[in-house]
Length: 139
Image (cartoon, rainbow, N blue to C red):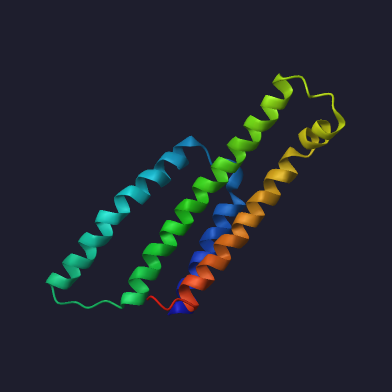
């Protein structure tokens, strides 16, 4: 069951990575609200399951919850990295450094730089999911 959960969330993270260029402020707001709302919802679900004497697999329930939070944080990080790089480049252009060779290279390769940062965060999400599903002693 752990392997199925891990594979599902890796595929979900890959889909988020694949559609990273379509992430906008609406997705950012939705992710932040989802993280805030998920905490009381998670507690309410566990409390309800306990009231009806249904004992769920604790590792699976916590794993699914934490994995969704990781995916939502990944969406936030993808948006924030893009905004930060746009701001840094606009700031360099505004102060007149557009003609310097290093800034020219950065402006020319901006999408490649942002994609590399997104790939690093995707790798981090995959490693985090792996560690959470298979190497967690707390669950």
